[in-house]
Length: 149
Image (cartoon, rainbow, N blue to C red; front, side):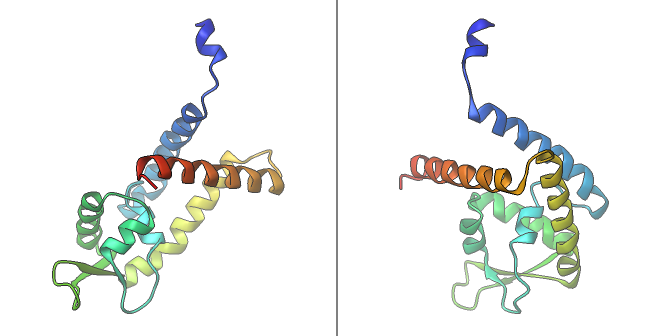
C-alpha cells in the first residue's frame, strides 16, 4: 500500500472522472433515449443542410469508424439524425440532424455545462482555463503516441 501512495498517476484521476462523467451523462440523458456514447456525435453535428461525411465526423471527434457506424445507426433509429449515401462516394454516408436532433443540442449542452460546473466547483476561471489547457496538451501528447504522429 505504501508504494501505491507514492505513485502519482494522472491517468488514474482522468479515468475516474471519465467513468463518473459517463454515469452522470447516462442518467441525465436517459429521458431522451440517449447515452454517454451518443451525445458527442449530436453536439458535433452542425445544422447545415448538407450535413457532414460520417468519416469526417469520426475523425473530428477521434472515435473509431466502426463505433461511429454503430452509433449512427442507433441515432438514426431514434430519429436524431438522417444518414444519406454520399453523392461523391457511394460507400460513405452524409449525416445531418433531424428537427429532433437540432432540438436536443441545447439540452445536451446544458447537461455538459452542469457537469463542468459540478467537477470544477471551488475553482476560479483561471484555474479552469489552466486545466483545460493542460488536458489539451496531454491529449495531443497521447495522440502522438497512439496515432504515430
